[in-house]
Length: 391
Image 1: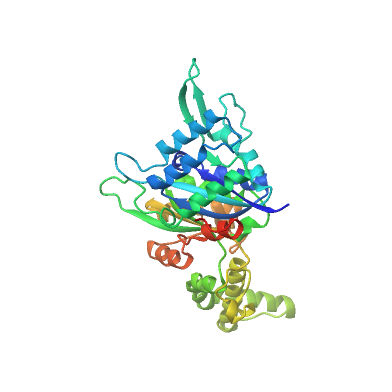
Image 2: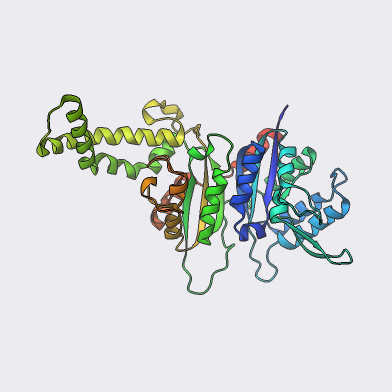
Protein backbone atom coordinates (compact mmCIF):
# COMPACT_ATOMS: atom_id res chain seq x y z
CA UNK A 1 0.00 0.00 0.00
CA UNK A 2 1.25 3.50 -0.88
CA UNK A 3 2.55 5.93 1.72
CA UNK A 4 0.11 8.57 2.93
CA UNK A 5 0.39 11.74 4.97
CA UNK A 6 -2.24 12.40 7.60
CA UNK A 7 -2.53 15.58 9.61
CA UNK A 8 -3.73 16.31 13.13
CA UNK A 9 -4.41 19.89 14.15
CA UNK A 10 -4.29 20.56 17.89
CA UNK A 11 -6.73 23.35 18.64
CA UNK A 12 -5.86 26.54 20.55
CA UNK A 13 -7.90 25.33 23.52
CA UNK A 14 -6.10 21.96 23.70
CA UNK A 15 -2.76 23.79 23.56
CA UNK A 16 -3.87 26.22 26.24
CA UNK A 17 -4.89 23.32 28.49
CA UNK A 18 -1.49 21.62 27.90
CA UNK A 19 -3.00 18.48 26.37
CA UNK A 20 -0.38 18.29 23.62
CA UNK A 21 1.67 15.49 25.20
CA UNK A 22 -1.27 13.20 25.88
CA UNK A 23 -2.59 13.69 22.35
CA UNK A 24 0.80 13.02 20.75
CA UNK A 25 1.42 9.94 22.91
CA UNK A 26 -1.83 8.35 21.76
CA UNK A 27 -1.26 9.16 18.12
CA UNK A 28 2.25 7.67 17.96
CA UNK A 29 1.66 4.60 20.11
CA UNK A 30 -1.75 3.64 18.74
CA UNK A 31 -1.18 4.27 15.01
CA UNK A 32 2.43 3.03 14.75
CA UNK A 33 2.98 5.78 12.17
CA UNK A 34 6.06 7.95 11.76
CA UNK A 35 5.84 11.51 13.05
CA UNK A 36 7.21 13.11 9.87
CA UNK A 37 6.87 16.82 10.64
CA UNK A 38 5.34 19.28 13.08
CA UNK A 39 4.86 23.04 12.97
CA UNK A 40 3.34 25.77 15.07
CA UNK A 41 0.96 28.17 13.34
CA UNK A 42 -0.56 31.50 14.32
CA UNK A 43 -3.36 31.53 11.74
CA UNK A 44 -4.29 34.72 9.99
CA UNK A 45 -7.91 35.49 9.16
CA UNK A 46 -7.17 34.33 5.61
CA UNK A 47 -5.80 30.94 6.65
CA UNK A 48 -8.65 30.32 9.09
CA UNK A 49 -11.22 31.29 6.43
CA UNK A 50 -9.59 29.09 3.76
CA UNK A 51 -9.49 26.09 6.07
CA UNK A 52 -13.04 26.65 7.34
CA UNK A 53 -14.39 26.86 3.79
CA UNK A 54 -12.66 23.58 2.88
CA UNK A 55 -14.25 21.77 5.82
CA UNK A 56 -17.69 21.89 4.18
CA UNK A 57 -17.30 19.48 1.29
CA UNK A 58 -19.48 17.09 -0.69
CA UNK A 59 -16.59 14.62 -0.56
CA UNK A 60 -16.58 14.55 3.24
CA UNK A 61 -18.47 11.50 4.54
CA UNK A 62 -19.34 13.31 7.77
CA UNK A 63 -22.86 14.62 8.30
CA UNK A 64 -23.33 18.12 6.82
CA UNK A 65 -24.47 19.44 10.21
CA UNK A 66 -21.16 18.30 11.76
CA UNK A 67 -19.24 19.96 8.93
CA UNK A 68 -21.04 23.23 9.59
CA UNK A 69 -20.37 22.89 13.31
CA UNK A 70 -16.65 22.49 12.68
CA UNK A 71 -16.63 25.38 10.21
CA UNK A 72 -18.25 27.69 12.75
CA UNK A 73 -15.80 26.56 15.42
CA UNK A 74 -12.79 27.34 13.19
CA UNK A 75 -14.09 30.80 12.29
CA UNK A 76 -14.51 31.60 15.98
CA UNK A 77 -11.45 29.94 17.53
CA UNK A 78 -8.70 29.90 14.88
CA UNK A 79 -8.90 33.58 13.86
CA UNK A 80 -6.99 36.33 15.68
CA UNK A 81 -8.62 37.46 18.92
CA UNK A 82 -11.09 40.19 17.90
CA UNK A 83 -10.41 42.18 21.10
CA UNK A 84 -6.61 42.23 21.01
CA UNK A 85 -5.88 41.14 17.41
CA UNK A 86 -3.37 38.71 18.92
CA UNK A 87 -3.10 35.51 16.92
CA UNK A 88 -3.84 32.17 18.53
CA UNK A 89 -1.49 29.18 18.63
CA UNK A 90 -2.27 26.06 16.59
CA UNK A 91 -0.05 22.96 16.25
CA UNK A 92 -0.13 20.79 13.12
CA UNK A 93 1.35 17.28 13.22
CA UNK A 94 2.07 15.17 10.14
CA UNK A 95 2.07 11.36 10.28
CA UNK A 96 3.45 9.23 7.45
CA UNK A 97 2.86 5.58 6.61
CA UNK A 98 0.54 3.10 4.98
CA UNK A 99 -3.15 3.80 5.44
CA UNK A 100 -2.18 6.79 7.57
CA UNK A 101 -5.38 8.80 7.19
CA UNK A 102 -7.65 5.98 8.36
CA UNK A 103 -5.33 5.04 11.23
CA UNK A 104 -5.12 8.60 12.50
CA UNK A 105 -8.84 9.14 12.20
CA UNK A 106 -9.58 5.97 14.17
CA UNK A 107 -7.48 7.26 17.07
CA UNK A 108 -8.89 10.80 16.82
CA UNK A 109 -12.51 9.60 16.71
CA UNK A 110 -15.67 11.23 15.45
CA UNK A 111 -17.85 13.97 16.84
CA UNK A 112 -21.05 12.81 18.49
CA UNK A 113 -23.04 13.93 21.56
CA UNK A 114 -23.49 10.42 22.94
CA UNK A 115 -19.82 9.41 23.24
CA UNK A 116 -18.93 8.86 26.90
CA UNK A 117 -16.09 6.33 26.89
CA UNK A 118 -12.48 7.47 26.54
CA UNK A 119 -11.52 5.29 23.65
CA UNK A 120 -10.52 8.10 21.28
CA UNK A 121 -8.80 11.46 21.64
CA UNK A 122 -12.09 13.26 21.18
CA UNK A 123 -13.77 11.02 23.75
CA UNK A 124 -11.15 12.10 26.29
CA UNK A 125 -10.44 15.72 25.40
CA UNK A 126 -13.39 16.86 23.29
CA UNK A 127 -16.96 17.84 24.13
CA UNK A 128 -20.25 18.17 22.28
CA UNK A 129 -22.95 19.15 24.74
CA UNK A 130 -26.54 19.74 23.65
CA UNK A 131 -29.46 21.16 25.62
CA UNK A 132 -32.77 19.39 26.20
CA UNK A 133 -34.10 20.60 22.85
CA UNK A 134 -31.07 19.46 20.89
CA UNK A 135 -29.51 22.90 20.65
CA UNK A 136 -25.78 23.40 20.99
CA UNK A 137 -24.53 24.40 24.45
CA UNK A 138 -20.80 23.73 24.09
CA UNK A 139 -18.45 22.32 21.46
CA UNK A 140 -14.72 21.62 21.64
CA UNK A 141 -13.33 19.06 19.14
CA UNK A 142 -9.83 18.98 20.76
CA UNK A 143 -8.17 18.12 17.44
CA UNK A 144 -8.94 18.18 13.73
CA UNK A 145 -8.19 15.31 11.34
CA UNK A 146 -9.25 14.54 7.79
CA UNK A 147 -11.93 11.85 7.28
CA UNK A 148 -10.52 10.69 3.92
CA UNK A 149 -7.32 10.81 1.89
CA UNK A 150 -8.84 13.22 -0.63
CA UNK A 151 -9.80 15.62 2.15
CA UNK A 152 -6.37 15.26 3.76
CA UNK A 153 -4.60 16.34 0.57
CA UNK A 154 -6.85 19.36 0.02
CA UNK A 155 -6.50 20.64 3.57
CA UNK A 156 -2.79 19.87 3.88
CA UNK A 157 -2.12 22.01 0.82
CA UNK A 158 -4.01 24.90 2.41
CA UNK A 159 -1.86 24.75 5.55
CA UNK A 160 1.27 24.32 3.46
CA UNK A 161 0.51 27.46 1.42
CA UNK A 162 0.44 29.45 4.65
CA UNK A 163 3.29 27.58 6.37
CA UNK A 164 5.83 30.35 5.78
CA UNK A 165 3.68 33.40 6.47
CA UNK A 166 1.67 31.99 9.41
CA UNK A 167 3.98 29.32 10.85
CA UNK A 168 7.32 28.78 12.54
CA UNK A 169 8.74 30.32 15.70
CA UNK A 170 5.73 32.33 16.84
CA UNK A 171 5.89 35.91 18.04
CA UNK A 172 3.46 37.88 20.22
CA UNK A 173 0.98 35.05 20.76
CA UNK A 174 1.11 35.10 24.57
CA UNK A 175 -0.34 37.85 26.78
CA UNK A 176 1.76 38.80 29.81
CA UNK A 177 1.14 41.00 32.82
CA UNK A 178 2.96 44.34 33.12
CA UNK A 179 6.42 43.77 34.52
CA UNK A 180 6.65 40.17 33.37
CA UNK A 181 9.95 39.24 31.71
CA UNK A 182 9.37 36.16 29.54
CA UNK A 183 12.22 33.95 28.40
CA UNK A 184 12.56 31.32 25.72
CA UNK A 185 14.30 27.99 26.10
CA UNK A 186 15.02 25.09 23.78
CA UNK A 187 14.07 21.49 24.52
CA UNK A 188 15.15 18.45 22.51
CA UNK A 189 13.25 15.19 22.91
CA UNK A 190 16.24 12.93 22.25
CA UNK A 191 16.60 10.02 19.80
CA UNK A 192 16.26 7.33 22.49
CA UNK A 193 12.53 8.12 22.52
CA UNK A 194 12.12 7.14 18.86
CA UNK A 195 13.59 3.63 18.67
CA UNK A 196 10.10 2.26 18.00
CA UNK A 197 6.59 3.76 18.01
CA UNK A 198 5.94 4.63 21.63
CA UNK A 199 4.11 7.22 23.67
CA UNK A 200 7.37 8.38 25.29
CA UNK A 201 7.83 11.61 23.26
CA UNK A 202 4.33 12.69 24.21
CA UNK A 203 4.81 11.58 27.80
CA UNK A 204 7.97 13.69 28.10
CA UNK A 205 6.11 16.73 26.71
CA UNK A 206 3.32 16.01 29.20
CA UNK A 207 5.85 16.30 32.06
CA UNK A 208 6.98 19.69 30.74
CA UNK A 209 3.37 20.88 30.65
CA UNK A 210 3.34 21.26 34.43
CA UNK A 211 5.69 24.25 34.09
CA UNK A 212 2.78 26.34 32.80
CA UNK A 213 4.94 27.50 29.87
CA UNK A 214 3.78 27.87 26.28
CA UNK A 215 5.06 26.03 23.20
CA UNK A 216 5.85 28.59 20.48
CA UNK A 217 7.79 26.35 18.07
CA UNK A 218 8.02 22.65 17.25
CA UNK A 219 10.06 20.84 14.64
CA UNK A 220 10.88 17.22 13.85
CA UNK A 221 14.62 17.47 13.42
CA UNK A 222 17.43 15.24 12.18
CA UNK A 223 20.65 16.75 13.47
CA UNK A 224 23.59 16.77 11.09
CA UNK A 225 27.05 15.84 12.33
CA UNK A 226 28.14 19.47 11.93
CA UNK A 227 25.17 20.69 13.97
CA UNK A 228 25.82 18.14 16.71
CA UNK A 229 29.49 19.16 16.87
CA UNK A 230 28.56 22.83 17.18
CA UNK A 231 25.69 22.19 19.59
CA UNK A 232 27.77 20.10 22.01
CA UNK A 233 31.03 21.97 21.40
CA UNK A 234 31.08 23.56 24.90
CA UNK A 235 30.76 20.08 26.44
CA UNK A 236 33.86 18.88 24.61
CA UNK A 237 36.23 21.12 26.56
CA UNK A 238 34.71 19.94 29.85
CA UNK A 239 35.17 16.31 28.82
CA UNK A 240 38.78 16.88 27.75
CA UNK A 241 40.02 19.08 30.60
CA UNK A 242 37.83 18.92 33.69
CA UNK A 243 37.44 15.20 34.35
CA UNK A 244 41.08 14.48 35.18
CA UNK A 245 40.31 13.12 38.66
CA UNK A 246 37.55 10.83 37.43
CA UNK A 247 39.59 9.48 34.50
CA UNK A 248 42.67 8.98 36.71
CA UNK A 249 40.65 7.14 39.33
CA UNK A 250 39.07 4.81 36.77
CA UNK A 251 42.45 4.19 35.12
CA UNK A 252 44.04 3.35 38.48
CA UNK A 253 41.23 0.92 39.31
CA UNK A 254 41.57 -0.79 35.91
CA UNK A 255 45.35 -1.12 36.25
CA UNK A 256 45.17 -2.44 39.81
CA UNK A 257 42.57 -5.01 38.79
CA UNK A 258 44.46 -6.11 35.68
CA UNK A 259 48.03 -6.12 37.02
CA UNK A 260 47.51 -6.55 40.74
CA UNK A 261 49.72 -3.71 42.01
CA UNK A 262 48.81 -0.38 43.57
CA UNK A 263 49.08 2.98 41.79
CA UNK A 264 50.25 5.89 44.00
CA UNK A 265 48.26 9.16 44.00
CA UNK A 266 50.91 11.07 42.01
CA UNK A 267 50.87 8.50 39.22
CA UNK A 268 47.05 8.43 39.28
CA UNK A 269 47.10 12.21 38.66
CA UNK A 270 49.50 11.76 35.74
CA UNK A 271 47.30 9.02 34.27
CA UNK A 272 44.32 11.37 34.45
CA UNK A 273 46.21 14.20 32.76
CA UNK A 274 47.39 11.94 29.93
CA UNK A 275 44.15 10.06 29.35
CA UNK A 276 41.54 12.76 29.94
CA UNK A 277 41.91 14.43 26.50
CA UNK A 278 41.60 11.03 24.82
CA UNK A 279 38.59 10.17 26.97
CA UNK A 280 37.02 13.52 26.11
CA UNK A 281 37.41 12.95 22.37
CA UNK A 282 35.96 9.45 22.69
CA UNK A 283 32.97 10.63 24.68
CA UNK A 284 32.36 13.58 22.37
CA UNK A 285 32.32 11.21 19.40
CA UNK A 286 29.76 9.07 21.21
CA UNK A 287 27.51 12.06 21.90
CA UNK A 288 27.62 13.21 18.28
CA UNK A 289 26.93 9.66 17.07
CA UNK A 290 23.99 9.34 19.47
CA UNK A 291 22.40 12.58 18.30
CA UNK A 292 23.13 12.41 14.58
CA UNK A 293 23.83 8.75 13.79
CA UNK A 294 27.52 9.25 12.97
CA UNK A 295 30.65 10.21 14.87
CA UNK A 296 32.79 12.99 13.34
CA UNK A 297 35.54 10.48 12.66
CA UNK A 298 33.10 8.32 10.66
CA UNK A 299 31.62 11.09 8.54
CA UNK A 300 33.01 12.11 5.13
CA UNK A 301 33.48 15.86 4.87
CA UNK A 302 30.84 16.22 2.16
CA UNK A 303 28.20 14.70 4.47
CA UNK A 304 28.90 16.79 7.56
CA UNK A 305 25.95 19.11 6.90
CA UNK A 306 23.49 16.47 5.68
CA UNK A 307 20.56 15.60 8.00
CA UNK A 308 21.49 12.64 10.19
CA UNK A 309 19.71 9.32 10.64
CA UNK A 310 18.54 10.02 14.22
CA UNK A 311 15.33 11.90 14.95
CA UNK A 312 14.44 14.29 17.73
CA UNK A 313 11.69 16.79 18.45
CA UNK A 314 12.80 20.37 19.00
CA UNK A 315 10.50 22.63 21.00
CA UNK A 316 10.75 26.22 22.11
CA UNK A 317 8.98 27.05 25.37
CA UNK A 318 8.15 30.62 26.32
CA UNK A 319 7.22 32.20 29.64
CA UNK A 320 8.55 33.77 32.81
CA UNK A 321 11.62 31.93 34.18
CA UNK A 322 11.32 29.44 31.33
CA UNK A 323 14.91 28.16 31.60
CA UNK A 324 14.81 27.32 35.30
CA UNK A 325 11.28 25.87 35.19
CA UNK A 326 12.15 23.47 32.37
CA UNK A 327 15.45 22.46 33.99
CA UNK A 328 13.71 21.71 37.27
CA UNK A 329 11.23 19.34 35.63
CA UNK A 330 13.98 17.76 33.51
CA UNK A 331 16.28 16.90 36.41
CA UNK A 332 20.10 16.60 36.51
CA UNK A 333 22.13 15.06 33.68
CA UNK A 334 22.70 11.77 35.51
CA UNK A 335 19.32 9.96 35.81
CA UNK A 336 20.55 8.09 38.90
CA UNK A 337 20.83 11.44 40.70
CA UNK A 338 17.54 12.87 39.41
CA UNK A 339 14.69 13.28 41.93
CA UNK A 340 11.44 11.30 41.70
CA UNK A 341 8.95 12.88 39.34
CA UNK A 342 11.61 14.36 37.05
CA UNK A 343 11.83 13.42 33.38
CA UNK A 344 15.32 11.96 33.58
CA UNK A 345 14.45 9.86 36.62
CA UNK A 346 11.38 8.48 34.83
CA UNK A 347 12.76 8.06 31.32
CA UNK A 348 16.57 8.34 31.43
CA UNK A 349 19.05 5.47 31.31
CA UNK A 350 22.49 7.09 31.49
CA UNK A 351 24.23 10.46 31.37
CA UNK A 352 23.95 10.44 27.57
CA UNK A 353 20.73 8.46 27.05
CA UNK A 354 18.70 10.68 29.34
CA UNK A 355 15.47 11.42 27.42
CA UNK A 356 15.76 15.15 26.78
CA UNK A 357 18.01 18.19 26.61
CA UNK A 358 17.15 21.69 27.80
CA UNK A 359 19.11 24.92 27.61
CA UNK A 360 20.83 25.85 30.88
CA UNK A 361 20.72 29.65 30.47
CA UNK A 362 18.92 32.26 28.35
CA UNK A 363 22.20 32.89 26.51
CA UNK A 364 22.66 29.21 25.69
CA UNK A 365 19.01 28.98 24.67
CA UNK A 366 19.61 31.71 22.11
CA UNK A 367 22.75 29.96 20.84
CA UNK A 368 21.07 26.56 20.61
CA UNK A 369 17.95 27.90 18.92
CA UNK A 370 20.23 29.47 16.34
CA UNK A 371 21.83 26.08 15.62
CA UNK A 372 18.66 23.96 15.52
CA UNK A 373 16.49 26.56 13.75
CA UNK A 374 13.14 25.31 15.11
CA UNK A 375 11.30 27.76 12.87
CA UNK A 376 12.71 26.13 9.71
CA UNK A 377 9.93 25.03 7.38
CA UNK A 378 10.50 21.32 6.75
CA UNK A 379 6.70 20.96 7.01
CA UNK A 380 6.38 22.24 3.43
CA UNK A 381 9.06 19.88 2.16
CA UNK A 382 7.40 16.80 3.67
CA UNK A 383 3.98 17.66 2.20
CA UNK A 384 5.26 18.63 -1.25
CA UNK A 385 7.49 15.56 -1.57
CA UNK A 386 4.40 13.36 -1.43
CA UNK A 387 1.57 15.53 -2.76
CA UNK A 388 3.26 18.04 -5.03
CA UNK A 389 3.45 21.84 -4.90
CA UNK A 390 0.88 23.56 -2.70
CA UNK A 391 -0.17 26.25 -5.18
